[in-house]
Amino acid sequence: MNQRPAILVFVQYFRPSYRAGGAARSIANLVDHLGDEFDFHVVCRDRDLGDSEPFDLPRGQWTEVGKARVWYEPLSARSPLTMLRLLRSRRWDAVYCNSYFNPVFSIAPRLFHRLGLARTKGLIVAPRGEFAQDAIKISGAKKRRFLRLARWLGLDRGVLFQASVEHEARDLADHCPYARGNIRLAADLTPVDELAGAANEFAPKEAGELKLAMIARIAPIKNIAFAIKALQHCTQRVRFDLYGPMEAPDYWAECQQAIAALPANVTAEWHGPIPREEVTRALAAAHVFFMPTFGENFGHAIFEALFMGLPVLISDQTVWRDLEPQQAGADLPLGDTAPFAAMIERWAAMDAPEFAPWREGARARAAQWLDGSPSVEANRALLLEAAR
Picture 1 (cartoon, rainbow, N blue to C red):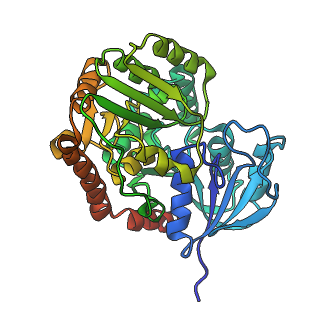
Picture 2 (picture 1 turned 90 degrees about the vertical axis):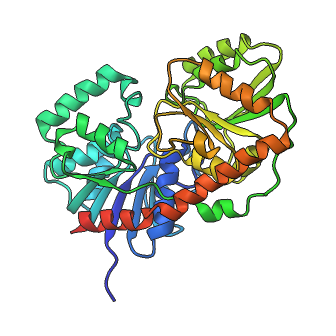
Picture 3 (picture 1 turned 135 degrees about the vertical axis):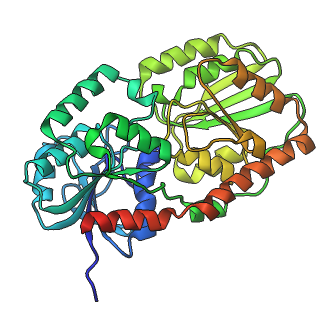
């Protein structure tokens, strides 16, 4: 029997984390789909995003978690030294970094690899949308300085880059000269089995009202303040429920100022983070998923909303494009809140029979993605190429 290729994965958050969003889910789904073919060892933080206390799990050692072995790194540890020790602990077929800019879980392993200190055949970097046109502008000066240093050091020489879609590949090539020619398209994998049991009942819909939901970190990249400002133009009854961990309190203060300016017919409320098992319940209580994000390389929450029959109102900075002709939602350019408000008003005016085709269109778009995406094979091929 052939031995499974050994893959060492560096990701800041992993199971049982649920607050970190798509980045953690991307690796969890990869392990679920391909854990029988590859020997995954995952290195992550010992706690969830924003938590002061660690998980009630062994730390600083390998622990079986599903189809992977997981190393929960204590927050107090000298993590780069741990990364080096793990990189040299055995011969790895490939190392996989689930970020480009994370100092501990991406930059440190790549630097050790560049210096010839890592015992590995190949290295994969998955930026997960970090190079999207608007995402790269956040802390832009700091990122530009690091990119110049990375080019000077040749940090990305010989690295394989994973892009989920064509436009992410173009963004990568624009900013990373060593990435050109080494970018592989492999879309994020989806937790379809987890969603299959979701209730088929929809929130009742009456003309003159609309319930919006967003599941995302409270962070500038999600463009929450823009979303709330769009609601200031709405004349019908609108409720906006936000779910997700607090990542940027200063940014949330800006959002609260926008909430204070909402008209009496519009309410917006943040409910904090919710565990995975409650996500479907939160989505089922809404009519539309609303997230005018600055950039997503895939958008797990967007896919989950479509799968459950919620049309999505998003920016044009994701893989989910041309939604309105299919009545699956709307993907609009950023810069002006008026088109977003107009779409909300349009949906709010509909009664249940008028809104039903949008429900059906959303589900059809999710099904289209599942039918047409060779994502499992593409991810398998990427891992095998790095291992060779």
